[in-house]
Image (cartoon, rainbow over all chains, first blue to last red):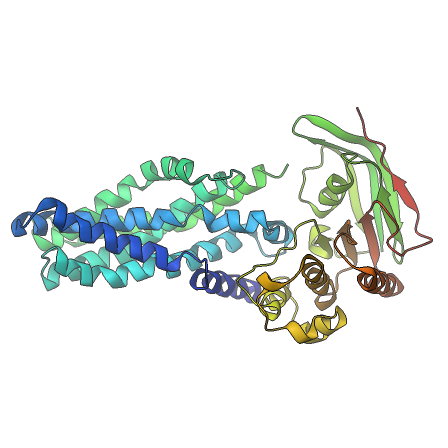
Length: 223
Length: 200
């Protein structure tokens, strides 16, 4: 069973970095969104510092959404999903492996790119580190909540917009606590640990609920 | 080993596809599912694989591990090839082999279906017939008693038909079961036929 999980994880990561995969798209989109903000706001450094964490978080949230509609649909269109559904590997685990591969190839590059983009937003080293840390802790929640949306919209052609409408409201708590944690680290007055623990709790909860709910959604669609 | 189906009924999208369908397939036997378009041939195969919900009736596999579902003991070869264009031929086959719980025999299986020389080619360059051959290779790397083949000869050339017939005969000789949906001859001459007429 571990063998099957590893095979699926490896294949999805491979597909993401090959031609037509979504790995680069997300980080490029993130780069563009965050780069545009200073141009839109103007050279007000204090303002940029204040809203910097929020911009990085919004960019990450939207970039994460980009490739999500292909997460399961790509396997549904070519018949791979049929084999995954009938395999002895529990569907929940298979979906978790797919989401993990998606996170590693799409969200992890965002975490790595965040410190560089922090420079553009006039964030100090400490603030940049804090934002990167909150992204590392919070983006798995975005991916695993998105997994539910991907499973629900799997049968729709071009379900991307519907997926965004389904998923974005559910990611609001993650966004709130992600930005709150970064702000707590930069300006206070709340201690860093309080919102950070809540952010981690959100991530851990979605790691469990996401694959289970997505599996239920896919099984409902067996018709 | 014996596949028993009794009084199966299937509905898709609110439309009754078939009902009251019963058949038995013994180990070493093939059953050809025939009938006009929309008679429910593909639906029947998907039902047996566990990809459709059983509306009514029973499906049993006698003489097998009761812990495993029929789908886990069957190879389902549908209209779609379950291949990723961005991966090479060997990577595609290697993935399914490992995912479905096997190991090793991939090069031999590729050679058996006539793709031995193309192992490193991306699957996007394969023709439709070659894609079908690559899907067939999956049936060889992992041994499963039941083969569910949905129009397996589609897109195959004449040597491909012969290859498929030889593979199926070897599978039957080893005690396997085959359930194949087809419109024409697939090279199994004495196989019984289950004709679906379709409900109106």
